[in-house]
Image 1: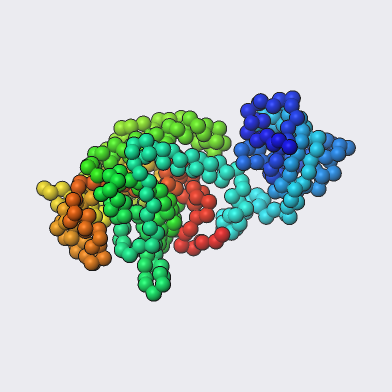
Image 2: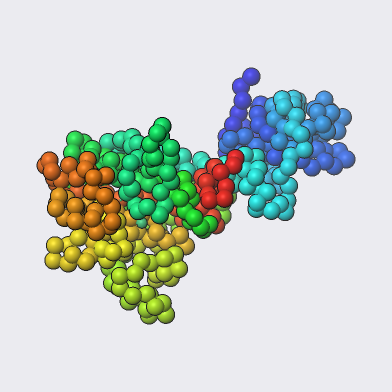
Length: 427
Ligand code: 4AD
Ligand code: MG
């Protein structure tokens, strides 16, 4: 039996023809003479009608929400049907009869999180996950087309990359290790062989507060490359984000519309992005009534306020050294300023952090000490500065933050199928 994907029927190629459709019952409504079934498969949802006194009627009466089914019927154009086409059912077979499905209207958010394994079947998550897959693929394509080699970083690590506060410890035989926060330090090792590398891997952060933009386990895209400076970082970042937005706007138009996101908003994302210094950012914040002082980190509220000045993504660069990680290179004539840059987007705030890495051995050792870290934990990392050091840069982009902004999701948890937060690791 050949099966026709629902999307192809909705595209109008099968009008008047008999098709077989396989999927799950999404909605069911019974009237005296007709049972209306919405069937969903991976590609879409279509209405099918079952008329009284037909062979299919008895099965249709029995069938429940989320039962799996195969049906055969004739495709008809019908303006009233969602999607414009419906199937007039001739035969209907139940594969797996579902028990009473626990998802109905007006359920609490907490309950929906308990049954996320079932919630994931809904249209919203179907669309988000397909776009997520596309976005990941596009990012791989972007870097490969530019000669970057994908490398696989370790998940168990011995020393922190982004500060101790968000480190997860992990028991490793008789040793205490951590889960990685970033592949960066390992990618830096590999540029000495491959020059341009990138990773697409999970990062772990013990985020102790629940926010709409933090996960404890997220996917992190991190390129790292040699012979480049902070301007190259901004250039590649704006090209990457624009490339992904343009491609998704073009390829995923109906999906975006179904999510309520206007594809034209993504089409507006084009390089170059506006660029302001941290100093300018602080001045803007003070004008807006914030008491932020030079040298302080910017939080979510400050980022959101600054983002209001721009219609799309923008950069803030040249942060005070104190607000940045130990590995950041500083200007030789301004040792208090790090060659570090964040990309911010409306509503979400920080989408990336990147910049130049300290490539001088003595400077690096000084910075490790100043950060209160132990030099002996970073010997292998310092070796990169002992043996043929080169200027090099990189950045990290949170995949779920990118999706949250692109798809205008209310909460980051809907950008990943099985979110991990301080209070939730089930299912
Ligand atoms: O700013 P972060 O901590 O920078 C780094 O990890 C660098 N080592 C990256 C690099 O230069 N290779 O993290 C980078 C990005 C953030 O801008 C944000 O998008 C995302 O990772 N991110 C998170 N996303 C979701 N949940 C969290 N708890 C996140 N923490 C960071
Ligand atoms: Mg950051």
